[in-house]
Length: 541
Image 1 (spheres, rainbow, N blue to C red):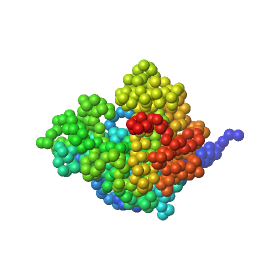
Image 2: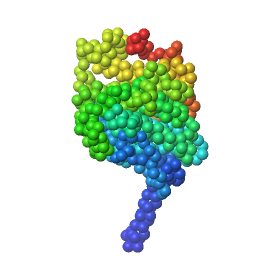
Image 3: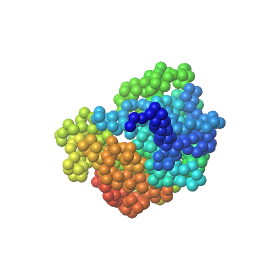
Image 4: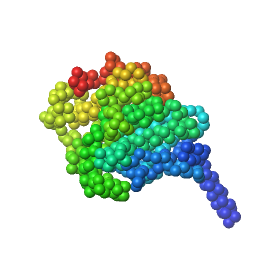
């Protein structure tokens, strides 16, 4: 039957009304207004009911006259601030190495880019909060410090999304942006005087200010300021290590998790001063025109760092811009020769992954072409005269590994395994708060299994974010098992300082008699003294 003109109009109105109702039903739901110490904020409610507050300013803009100086509180605001978009990440330094072009682009979708991220900027002192509710329940607070080797990174990377972890564990998750590279770690006091006494640790002081914000505001966001866990992977793990040795951070956190990033030492002041002088020379700045440091475009300063680094040999052989042992902010090396007394009562969870360096090395020219004859010489470049003994152990442990994978494993274990065990030993020697050790051995099947158990693989598991990170983990029952094991353990540790929970067998604290480690694989299990022969060789036992 033909529709009349009126019927068509009525039908059109009905369709329009339904569309409007559907749009409204799917529209973002505003959170409650929360009054923070600097001003009120309002975020959004996620699909799972978690409230997220993005881009909360915790520090004033560290630009112009504030560049290289300790952070300060922002000016208070009196209107409700929009907390629905991330704040800018810090100025980023060198380019990350991709595994392969196509796969590297897939990884970029979880580790570097998202549609709502902003362009990197010196004005970067922002944090993000995920909470199940803004009530007075006093949940554990888990503060994540991003990776990136003090050079790049952001608390807004997709894999760090805290909604699923907050929902599963009934915890509050916080991620932080802070100054990086030259803007966070340029040690200037010997060059520019007392005004810059803390410039070599400005980025770490940013984190301290963020933790003070957590102390002052956790309760308003449904968290417990008396139960704060700091955690991080890679450079983030190193940041956690250094905070454990910083008097200004004492009392601001109560547990610490270090993932593939043991920080045993800081940068000696004299080494940091030499690096600063080389950067200033590239900029044409000396004591007579230091005012230019506050006036030059940020990108020009970064370009000078790149040039000075290249002249110094590039990579880790070049300039290292990281926390400086300045005798004040960082009075001593974090875990050398002993664990720091300032954090003796803080429990630690620490561990590493089996094939840490594949995510970097599979794109190296030698990977896949290294021969058995070439291998001993390359290993000697990493461990010196220990090469032959170590090679014999690795060939026995991993008989199916090609020379490329064997070298890759030795490079990773020399740093991550050896450093993690050393840190655990020194913490356990205090006979105070416990330390727990883990070892991730499950191999991801993505990219035809080329990565095995790489650096960063632990992150989507402990964040309960396999849904967001299938490009790295795949989406199998095995990946879901790892996700449940690790996220449950991290939540348990944040709640009580002990990672034991129903998802894993009994997990003993670490000591130098048993050296227990929880091995995360399809079925979690405890191993005593994993890689014992490797440990003995690297430690010279």
